[in-house]
Amino acid sequence: MKKTIRDLEISGKKVLMRVDFNVPINDGAITDSKRISAALPTIRYALENNAKLVLFSHLGRVKNESDLEKNDLKIVCDKLSELLGKKVLFSSKTRGSKLESMIDSLEEGSVLLVQNTRYEDLSGKKESKNDTELASYWASLGDVFVNDAFGTAHRAHASNVGIASNVSESAIGFLIEKELEYLEGSLTTPKRPFVAIIGGSKVSDKIKVINRLLEIADKVIIGGGMAYTFLKAQGYDVGKSLCEDDFLDLAKELLAKSGEKIILPVDNRASTEFSNETEVVVVDSDKISPDLMCLDIGPKTEKLYGEVLSDAKTVVWTGPMGVFEFSNYNKGTFAVCEVLAGSEAVTIVGGGDSASAVEKAGYEEKFSHVSTGGGASLEFLEGNILPGVEIIGDVK
Ligand code: ADP
Ligand code: MG
Image (cartoon, rainbow, N blue to C red; front, side, top):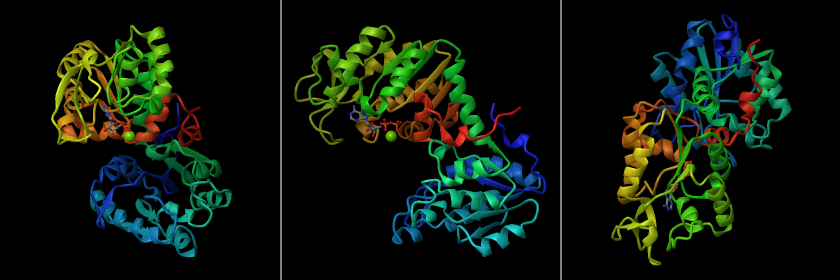
């Protein structure tokens, strides 16, 4: 068990905390502040327990001078002050005497946000390459470290792994704690039946997840673009649907090995073009004509998946069932959302697009857990170690 912020002595201490404030910004305004809200519980806990809190986050990518202004964290600082109902100090620099004196004069229960950690990427990618000088400098600014940035936990950067390697004590925050509780819990001690739903565009993107979930789950529903590689492997014609011929042998192998676990679409919503404007045709999986491109699962499949999910006790879902960005082809994904929203099972969503589909459908609150880290959750489901979590000490 990883140490959490509850296990640290933080009163009166300078607490360095990595959060994920990488929010979407459009025309100089934050369009979704969910990531800021998600960090509030740990921030509040630190402040209530008299920490002198120093926050680090990245925002966007910084490759050239021209990326600096649009990725300035000041806008996030203002939003955080508003959501926290408390003034948040801001250091416009990632290092230097001004930042140091601001930290030195922090009062207990007050908070400072440091400029975008990726400003350090401008000369030599110091943040992203976990530069040792930068990591030890940032670590020298505080006493203990808390990582609560799940979204970047799959990367070893100076502001997470680097600081953690250079402070005496480190812990995870409540956001990462919850992510681990659900993601790890579902994979190690799932209540059964455990049904996995895997969708999205390509088999190649998700092959490790497919393999792992086929080992652990009782049933694996495969939808989205990747289903057509499996249908073709079964001998069906898939027309113009997304299909990775290089993965046909693998799909055949998986079907031979665990065919009884795999559930594929029996019908589909299709069209002649990758477009929301052309006519929608519903077609059974064994009758896909050469001119058709399947863009969503069909109504019979929705029903079938609903039946498979009806007695599930644990469901892990990653990847939409169709091209949910098009209103004609979001139906399968939304149907699965609806089934899971009404389910008694522990329901977990991982993957960036799946999470935004759940949100778009308005069902976010009905799930047990919607991961805040698209890439990180996927790596976790693949069985990869997350360096940002791995570096944190265990409870003795
Ligand atoms: P996640 O981010 O949840 O892991 P992916 O990135 O793997 O999901 O896949 C999401 C993408 O898959 C979406 O952009 C969606 O349009 C695409 N997709 C889903 N079904 C199909 C399909 N039948 N044909 C083409 N693309 C599809
Ligand atoms: Mg995606």
